[in-house]
Every structure is written in C-alpha cells, then in structure tokens.
Image 1 (spheres, one colour):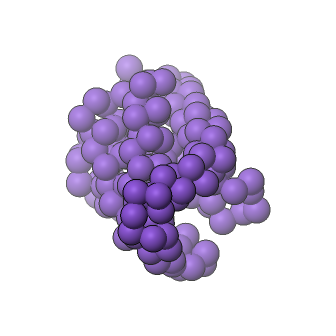
Image 2 (tube, helix red, strand yellow):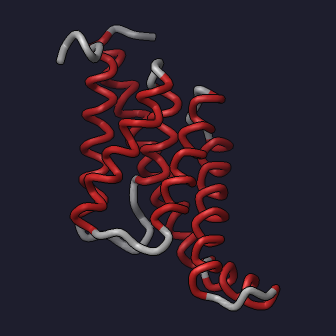
Image 3 (cartoon, one colour):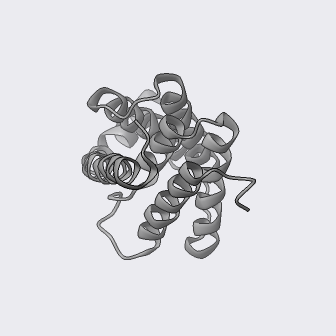
Length: 164
C-alpha cells in the first residue's frame, strides 16, 4: 500500500474518508462534506486519476449505506465537475467554493426537475425556487467542510509532512 500511495496521498485519503463518514451521521439537510470533498480532492491530489476516483469511490461506499436515488447520476456528474474545478485551479478559495456549490446546485436540481416536475418553464422555476433553502444549507456545509479540510490539511502538512 505504501508504494501505491505517498504519505501525502494517504493523508488526503484519510481526510476524505473522515469527511465522507460525516455524511452518514445525522446532520442538517444538505450540510454535508460532499462538495468540499470533491474540491479538496481536485486541489490536493497531484495524480489527477486519484482526484476523481477516490472521492467517487468514497461517495459510492457511503451511498451503499444511505441508498441511491433517482438523481444519483446527477450528483456524481456534479461531483466530477467539482473535482475538475479543483484540478484546474489547484486551489480552495472563496471563489472556487462558491463556483463548486453553484455547479452542484444547478446540476443536481436539473435532475430533480427532470425527475419530478412538469417539463415547463413554470416547473423549472418552481423546482429551483423550492431548492433555495437547500442551497443555503449546502453553502453552510461547503464552506464549513472546505475550511476544515483546507486548514486541517495545511496544519498536518506543515507539521508532519514538511510540504509547502
């Protein structure tokens, strides 16, 4: 296992596993580490393959316990896009967190609209309007968990991994 992953990668994976475990514990609706994990993975894994595979694998494993829904495909596509944002920017900033949150909101609620609302402008607007309170909660979770992941990893890196 040590030859497969570097110490840095093992620390990143550990942070992701702990964060995803938070998803299966009771929580306020949509205040989860999902988006933050995808952004963190993209920003910190040097191997782009791991930036996509590890968080998706963690999501899949937690979904085995939580269950899958009609919009799971949309959630995973959004998750991949957020990982891409992290990979392309290599940063976790207010801007990348907001962009990630907004992307996740738009993609997943498009799936909700397709699965459960009339295929009209009115149905579309109703879907996104009713989703606004969930978006507020998502933003809270995204900023909280992004901060925990970012500052936690920076602390561990500086203290134990001696990376810049």
